[in-house]
Length: 61
Image (tube, rainbow, N blue to C red):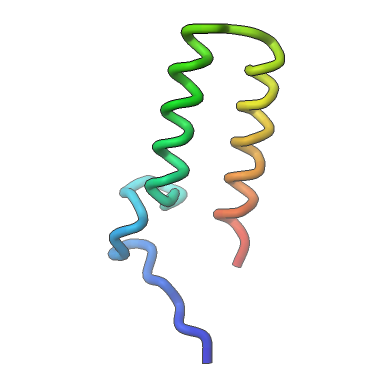
C-alpha cells in the first residue's frame, strides 16, 4: 500500500494554501529576482509556464 505524505506536517512543504515544496518556492524566488534584474517578455513567459507546470505537479493526486 502506498504511504501518503501529510503535506500539513511534512518538513518538505511550506505553510501555504497549495503546500508547495520548499525547493519549488526557492526556484520561484530566484526566477522572480532574475526577472526584476533582466526583464524580458521571453523570461516572463518562461516564468508563467514554469508556474503552470508547478501548479499542475502539486495538484496531481
